[in-house]
Structures are given as structure tokens and as C-alpha cells.
Image (tube, rainbow, N blue to C red):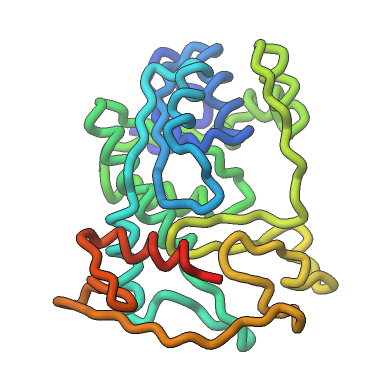
Length: 269
């Protein structure tokens, strides 16, 4: 059995990790029009920049999804984050600078939990919006096969037919509009951002150039610590652990593993 499919498997079910952004929206609509049967799966990772999770599956249904599900991944993400801290693997240090592994942890949880949900629905082909240029294409490939050994991979961005028709953001936006969807292409930032309840990372595009720095970033979690005009007062934080898991923060007790992470995210300056 071929693991990686180079062309759209017409008539078959394809699960797509659906963020609701331009790439996955256009890919889902295109796959349906070309004869595939797309199923949409959205991971709730507690992203601070996502205003309405419930609206995402509804949009997927509008674009032609056979079914669309919202998968709550927060509890598993918190568990993986705590395990990473316990193992000293929550961050890497390169050139004296710290890079937090919040995005890699989120990819591991997304890849495994969405594929598990797909398997429940009898969907054994995975698709997503990652391009051939990034490491996400490898991450989802590996994590998906760990969860479902029979999984096949179909990536729109590895399909020459998709690329020839919708090879860029402008083409995808025009495609959505031509199909009757009032999809306004968002202004492209000078860098990309990935976030979840553990933290946010900013990378790529202008940040790849040596003459750019972190100072071009507008953080969505935390503050511009590099700006001397931004005052960050010191604070004392107390955490109570039971069996290795945080159960209270500053005297406030939590009933579920996911709550401390949500609380700390809300109370950051």
C-alpha cells in the first residue's frame, strides 16, 4: 500500500486538519469539487487568538465537508506540557536564546488526537494545509502513522493538480470568491505565528533574515519584554502539586488539569 498519495483519491474519505484559514478552506472546497469526500477535524488547543471554536466546523460544512468535528485536545496538551517540563524538554537553547517547544508539543497532540478521531469515523487518509517547505509535513506524517498504521497521507500542497490551480494565497482567495463565498484574504504578516494554551512561537518570513529581529513581533501572549518602556513588575507565584500535577495556583484550587493552564494564560501581563 502506498503511504503518500500524489493525487486526489476521488470517491474516498479524506480527513483534513481544518483550521478555518484560507489554505484549509480552499483545499476542502477544492477536494469536494474534484470528487473526494472530505471530513474536517479541528483541534481545540486553547489558542488565545481564536475567538469562536464552534464556528470553525460550521464553516467546514459550508465549504462541503461531509462531516466536521471539533476535538478538545486541551487536557492532553497540558499533560504533554507538564511531562516536557518534568523532563527538561519544554524548551531548546540555541545561541544563548530560548525557543519554547509549545508548537512542537501542539503538533504531536494534534496529529495523534485528530487521527484517532478520524479512525472512529472510518477515515484513513490524512490531509492538512502544511506546505512542502516546512517541518509540519513530516511531523503530521510521523504522528499520524503512530496512531493509525494503515493511514495514508494526501497533501494538497504535494499534488501538482492543486498547485497548478491554486498555487498561492491570491489564487485561493479568488477561488473562494468565485465559488460564492465572501472570503476576504487577511493581510499577510511579516512572520508566522503558532499558538496554543502553552505559549506562542513566531518564526519564518522576515524573521529568517539576519537584519530582522524579535522587535518586529507583536506578541499575542506576554509582552514586548525587549522594549525598555514596558515595565514588567516582579511577582511571587505559588503552585501546589499533587502527584506531580499542579492543582492550585496562588491559593486558587482547580478541579481539572486543563484549568491551571487556562488560568495562567489569562492572568499573564
